Image (cartoon, rainbow, N blue to C red; front, side):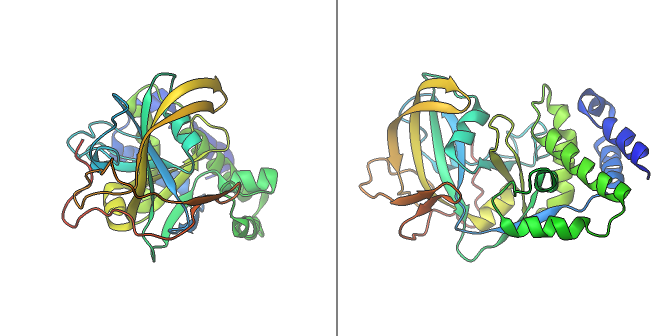
Length: 303
């Protein structure tokens, strides 16, 4: 496929055009596009913390972790940014600011945030949307991974100008689709199909934030979360003020890092966790602990 044909096909898969496609036909067209695209992936381990937020009705928050992780299949009725109907996914961001931005949190709202990470010993492969474009345009990694800069350089070396252009175009096209606001659930058909094709249910997908410039989000299937992740802590925040550009005043209302085996939150626990923080690495646990894990044969989603 030449460059003009590739662009024409990609344009036909945008926005309102998606309404007219059967999902099987859309997957076929997407696979045709992906013949000219080589995605990048990086492993994510227990060193990377991920934040998931959900608005709650009061400062009391939710009583169970399972209220905050992902919906049940019965509740997941529509396409999501990286999931098909009835196939729920765990969505998270790499810091709390991005979580609040994605939720479009407003003053007076209560937001419950959980902190999760891959279990110790897990190296979860995560494909990154937009990394190729970002490295080639800025010389820097979108996800603070210097080894990916060399990987992008090696990827484009030896490609013809047209093949390199296709690669960059498709990476930028996918990044734009993942980071755009969707007016209707069917506008997620393309990104959901890409997530399904890429992960095959065994890894994760990282993509640019919709609301926060520079923010990164993560999506994994419910099964991948259950098998590979643990929850370290949960907080309930009241949004005191929002100034724009991701700048918030937050009031901490409740916090816990102790949970029953079934996920019930022990809000009156005296336990606490200590963290360090760096601009590049974000929050890191000062002393390693084992977090709460989904009991075997029990999914986490009970919304």
